Amino acid sequence: MKREKGWTWAHICKEIAGFSDTLIVGALLGQFKLTRPQAAKAADLFGLGKAETAMLNEVPTRGSAMPPTDPLIYRFYGW
Image: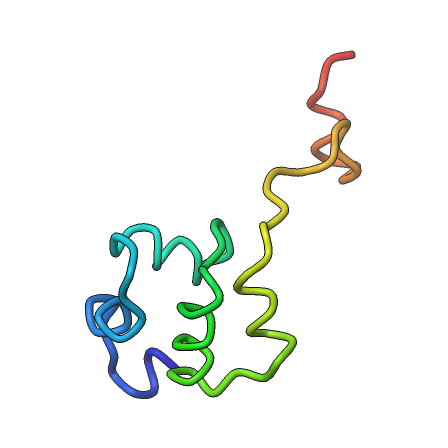
């Protein structure tokens, strides 16, 4: 939707507001969480449903499983 509407990150951050632009962009990219009011603003802006809005307010899972489960990457770990 960002590309379709020609929005910049600055425009999106201005609409959601409340944190630094870096934290808002990080939250929208799945690295942080937004407050409930910010998640509601993002949902209105992007036309998200209840499930997606709730996900914006949850602590994301970062990182990957250890040991890695991908066979190729697993081979590079020298156990």
